[in-house]
Image (cartoon, rainbow, N blue to C red; front, side, top):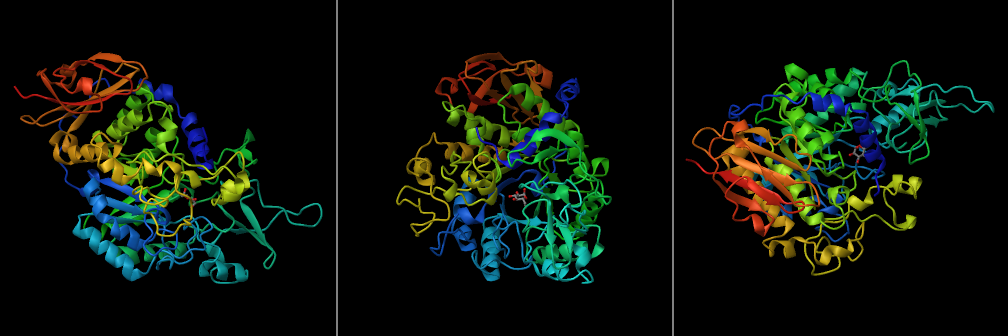
Length: 587
Ligand code: GLC
């Protein structure tokens, strides 16, 4: 199995989490049976991440674009998506495929124009789909006029917009970096600029200099750009790499953990460059700014954090005045299909974030797809169905990534000369980059571009399985993963207990099967979900009285196993990796 640099970061942080303590903290009472009904849109939403280069090409240049997204809105509406998050489509030299922004208030010509964007928002709105943008706050492109000015002289008014520092004297007179900080993408995090004889700091590529968030002018300018898009009708933002906005003002060396990472750099404990407390003041002010807009605009955070206590801080703890939806990466990137782990972590995020709304996610553009991370190579489809059931039937807001609904696999380049993601070039062969999870959307089997583009040369090649794994083929198959997603999302919208109910874990000592009930107000149906996380059949006999439910008669609502279609009780045998969702019959 391949992990990207970012996956390694996640794994490292998750592994330092104290799982024993988490297990011990499972509440003995089963949680809130009937939470108050709250119709705020993002609390129920299915958010769909679009990597614009790879979704739909409308002009035949081999790269996806905004008009392509507009063309596919009917598909997204039929899937049941409430909001799309578009990865950066701002002008950019595309070193990090848009995450190196050179102008926050325009559209990259490769993706279209502002008029195209406005049309996309309007067409999406007609289909009740909101548009969320990806704000890259930590850094700009080195081609952004702010940086060009900042780099031009030590006295330029924008000098202090970035993080500049003198080097240390080197043995041969050449300056050495100011400290040992490493870039997440390999090598020193400091780049020397001979013109002004100082280094600038970059957490990511050297073409992505870090903004200096200690300078209020930076906050003012970035908030201004956010307002530019809020005024154009965007429903909110996904905040890129948001825990890394601040660095230690004393610029102390980070302690070594021992060993090296995939890029060959020493592994460091990133205590001086990640998750510094100062960031929370910025987020509180950002929340206050966004809240002034009507329509429940939302802030979603790319928050890879080691544990739920840290996640809670991103909501603002008891004050709940920071992000509405920091991503819980702990559940979806545990990378192990294990009932105890999921149960403990879902319970934790339900009970230890001061009643804030969890957001769970299994896939994004930085990590090996969940199809491969959780799949065992034999039962991948059943496992993908089980993951989707978890994603859509807990209380969490659900975030999914294009192609997840089809079972698109990670298709990693096999030759370094084909790699597009720079970390895959510098890290080859240990780190092959993120191209594998960014391949074009597989729409149909009509041509080798799977109708993603009319150009035979697409920016990344279509994976060979496009002939069978594609929207058109799967729509025609009632048992496909795509139709499974549609059924689950529709159930999530229409069933009171899944939409608004509480959640109570069942059979909590069972390490093989994750089961829970979504509780409904009296007079409505409770719904039971049982997920066999093993390759062996598992017999269960769920006791619903722990959730205050006396009725025993069940009716199957959804299962991927024909043998469970007629189940009428919660005493059933689940085939390997089976999903069963049943409704408790009213007396
Ligand atoms: C985030 C993005 C990733 C990007 C990095 C630097 O982690 O998801 O794609 O490379 O930030 O902007």
